[in-house]
Amino acid sequence: MIRVLFVCLGNICRSPLAEAIFVNKVNAAKLQTRFKCDSAGTSDFHIGELPDDRTIKCASKYNLPLKHRARQVNRTDFRDFEYILAMDENNLRSLNNLKVRYGFADKEIHLMRDFVTETQGMPVPDPYYGGDEGFEEIYHILDGAIDSFLAQIKETHQLYV
Ligand code: 4NP
Image (cartoon, rainbow, N blue to C red; front, side, top):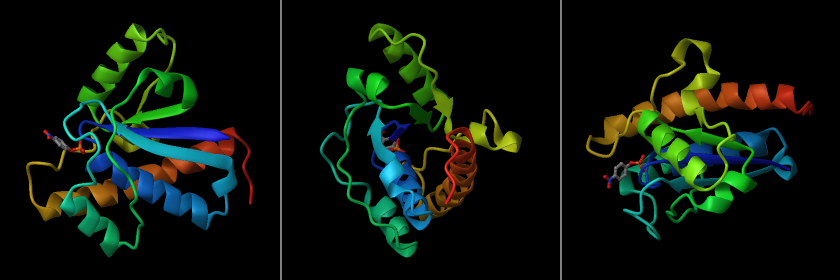
């Protein structure tokens, strides 16, 4: 089982949308038995909440089921998830601090957009303080980044359908 965790700050905008896009692609490729996927936030701001209304609206526009409640990253995530994908440098910094504190200093954390050569080091921008157009933008960013990520892990883990 390949375990993938998407991480942002609040776990109500970017990472639950990333999770929904990823699950949809995995299902379309009939690879659902090979993956476990979840999302989490580095902050405790929205623990227990449903995704932001704008996330829900965007997901429904693209027919993506969303059934997530926000949770905060915890110690066992570093043990349980093979791939931990941060949306931006702030999330990456938080995760890199946490992993040391929790005794997983060697664990490699990835930036979501690093799987597309041309966008390495770039963030999935935080849409929280903007309007609906920011959610449309992150949907397209995530869709492309996740295609590349999935292509790469299919190669790495020799998953052929
Ligand atoms: P997310 O967006 O990290 O993509 O879920 C945010 C959600 C909430 C806040 C910031 C970003 N906040 O400051 O409450």
